[in-house]
Length: 166
Image (cartoon, rainbow, N blue to C red; front, side, top):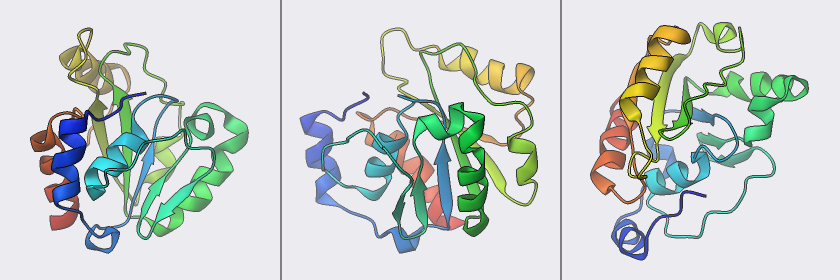
């Protein structure tokens, strides 16, 4: 699990953000992509990250289990939950070169802004440029791509500012 360091947690706990300040968004992606860690970082919450077992709501912010993204039998839950958000954020770890975007799943969200976040860019085996190229060339992703690391508050701030400004 992509856990924030104690220094990062201390920095994050100095300033927290209300979920109501964000436009409605939903985090999607495979198991262990860093979705829950990203949400905690965006909200400035210093609590320990735990495995998401069910769809979790923080007002307008939605965190989804990776299993819901990976298994077609759960797609209906993602589709239903997405009705109340304006932005879908696909989270993909920088050290995973196998893209798992289910064919056609993102196509049903034509009325939503699609954003990708390449997480875990601080890992020794991270290859964010390769992952970005895979998303663009192999998966046809056309939205904004952000790069984040849980131990880099500045990378989180760029995404947070974007989500709060639009």
